[in-house]
Image (cartoon, rainbow, N blue to C red):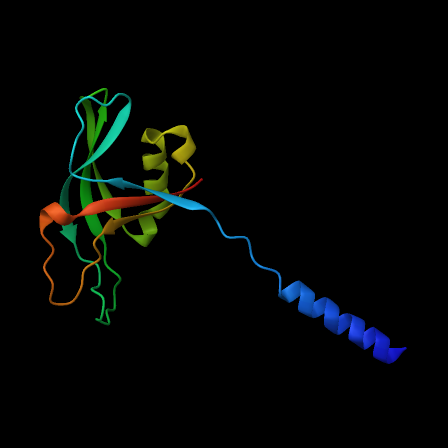
Amino acid sequence: MKNSLLAFLLIFCISVFAQNTKKENIKYVKITQKICLKKTGYQLVLKAIISDSRCPEGVTCVWAGEASAVISVYKDSELVEDKTIIFSVKNEEKNKEWFAKYLPEKQREIKKSSVFPYPKQGVTVAKKDYYIKIGYLK
């Protein structure tokens, strides 16, 4: 009896821990420095990267750093506002709320937002190569 109970518990534990965890289906939208003048509705455009003090890959830093960007919001090709967004761990929730105001309904469940490319030691990134990537649940 003890052996059967032990075998049952062993099989049960193996089957429970062997279950796949459900992966989140995350899609991405990019905010670039280009504007489409014929687009209707809200459009987000990266106006400028003000600063990028994030810790480069391959370097050990005391502080993770942050990146600051100016994002222009257009509605039906008319400028609504310019907003300075600071991308850091402490501003993550506030940034998600702000982006959600201007994204389409199906893209409002934002999981993350980041400035790309991420800095690398000894590599200078041209201002025109920066973009913002927003991950949302599909």
